[in-house]
Length: 357
Image (cartoon, rainbow, N blue to C red):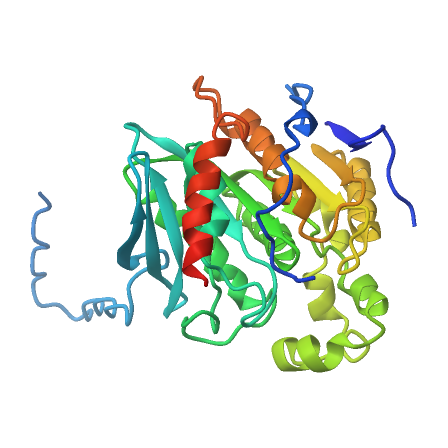
């Protein structure tokens, strides 16, 4: 078990925008996370002879392809080292949109699932979000979630829409250039909450497909968040997306709040939070870090002095995230650090950001 709670200035933590994560700011390579301490041709079925027992009826043909099946991938940008695609895939019988990127280097690569923040068009993906991972050497995928970005269905803020995240796991495993045993997950803000729930579901399923995780300003306690926002979330989030409020029905909010089930977060997790975050209190992450420590989990909590909700001055936390993923998903001698790939990350990010204008 490893728990490290530290600030980028000292070994301490703060006691007590937008919901989408940005990728801007000043390089802080000297603040990269140190390597953490080690913890240990089929034959036809014969026709049965007539009998008094009726034959078993054949299984019905599924009405839609299996979860994680790629419906289409459209190339949107390509360099000598990488390729990026607009992605549409199947999840719970719905067509979901997102993005996928892959390095062109030969062999199998580790993979990262990026969970966006926000809701509806707030925090909607543009493709730039997966650039740091792809340029560093990961296959990466991200979902707009159901009901968003042209996807079918209706989002419910951490309910069934979490399947749109976890169904990216079989999608990634189906790709010939992905190592199925090295899949990680990143989430910012609401995406952090989605990551926590995905980790819970991964543990409950017994699959343990997600080998490492990182969150930035992750929502860990919806009750605390509701109080922080002085009840303003009822009309914009709770009633339209969840269908109730914490006061009316606590259960859906407990199911979405990692502080109620820290024992179900098994993957090594890095918790990043800006000390000047005014969207999601750092106290939520502090509370979760403490509970993970008490549950004997492998976790590290890093605070960022002056850091806002998306950690704008700190490249969205990507240097630390890539260091964490490099440690837990690496092992092949490939340098996937932010510093090494910073120029390529900047160049490709510039292209994506220019498409928004």
